[in-house]
Image (spheres, rainbow, N blue to C red):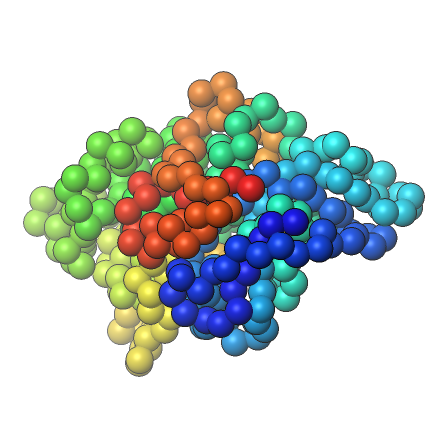
Length: 328
């Protein structure tokens, strides 16, 4: 099989397209013929060498969609998945503890495979699993989003931010606002369900105050600690901020004083969903809404496996305007 393999941490050019044996599934595992894989920033960090437990060479990719090729064994735990099913998989050590989705085939535990009934094109289906898992989990598990809420998405033009806006509008949320560093991204955000766009100057709380605006009930923080303190100021008492993303490429505060940073009565939580959360996401329901045009999924750029270097260069440049998907 063909695979994009990284032997040494570094830039996008570290990827080498190689021929590898097709992996063999054991009982309790599924062999998937990968049709598409979405790119994620966590893979960029792994590529750069920031995932300390990852051993190289490694086939990266924390998610994949495709067709089941083999499900060894006949125990009751495997009967719900059969050869030929369309499936999605994510997390659980993919691309880190074992080889992931940047290949024509991957083997994963059956416990992290969802059968999905969909006729979506592979590039659209491939954009869904991890992006939707993250946005859905952040909104409905961590933030407990309600229709009556005013929601702020910090980092709105990220793939997760765009998906979150679409999911919030599908719920019927009263008001959705989002930030972008560029005024030129307003049309993109509005087309995904955003009502109000803030050009991010690092002080959104001041912009809200100056225009006499109402603070938000919920805030999805996708930039990270570089903007978290300001995002906390944008939320009213009783509201919640969920730290999910690290687009700002900074993992932690040099000094963190909760009593200075967290306003009185504002709640701070986080979301980093794993296999359990992924398996609870209603992927078939979401995919069918996308098929019917009721939910928008923004696919930014599509590449082939041979173009993995270019795909990662696009991710590094933050200019995709949606999810980057690689077809295998």
